[in-house]
Length: 421
Image 1: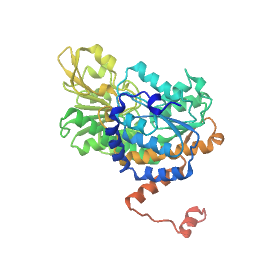
Image 2: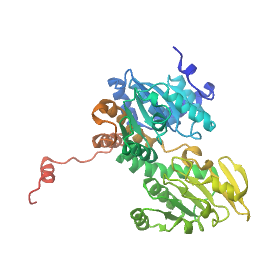
Image 3: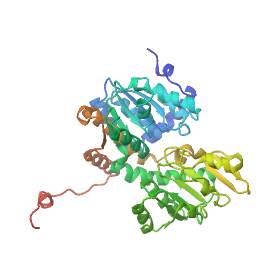
């Protein structure tokens, strides 16, 4: 039998020592996942099963893979974004007995091949990010569906794709919508995205945010976090939205709200967080200020329309790592960060370890849940059971040394009663 080194496709196994240090660091700051690892080591919920994972392949994801492996699984992992993969982390995982198909910045053809190689291991369970594995399984590689019991999805974008498949009656196995869990969107999407986006922007540009105008495109949970952190950095914040309720919420949170065409005229920084395409496009470039900085925090690199930007520009050059400068015919210059890909991961290290601790705990527990219940669930998208969500929160509180109250029996009875109070 081939070793994981022989089976894997990575950049360089010699990079492993640095990768081990990164994984050790996050391990020390992920107490919830450590607690679940202890349970998995005792219970072996995935013994004899193959698990395929497609996530942003950096240290925190690597530790999730090791936790699933500790539960008895034969784990194969690939990256969910070509610019977020860290080659040293890949090498470290291979040394730890996990098969890896991932490299930093492969060309589009190789990137797709690495996804397919991951699925060709014929997994029983999957963890997906953005729906890439699921899409391949339901289109060009239906032959690999036979062993799939189900899986878990990380993102809003992926869940939208899954629900489209379910609506059309095409979904072939159950998937747990991890993104919709309380301990995901309240903390990961809001606090994680809020901090990591600005980590990525600030380390890439080395420019001040205070006093500048930041346009946040989309006011979902990720947009809320980005806007909140921008305000904390001293920016003037504008929110653009297509949802009237979210627009009112942004207004009551103290932010200016206006159409994108108006915001485009005054913004210094633009951050897209919609999960949709072309939210910044040709008509907006025509009115933007010289020096505007464009970044994306949505899963796919389609929110900032780069095709129309190139059509309107007369030149393009890389002026700093992860910054491309586009010069317009009238001399205005715009700067796109990380090729319009996820700025917090393509130009940073992603969410803080303590935040991903909760999200990846949900992933691990959801994977066990779907494995235990896939026959009863059927071929549909389901939410994380509330008791799992609450258990993650309780583990988190315990790791912080925080206790909370419990209802008395009289209080429970009072809340359950329909009679006059």
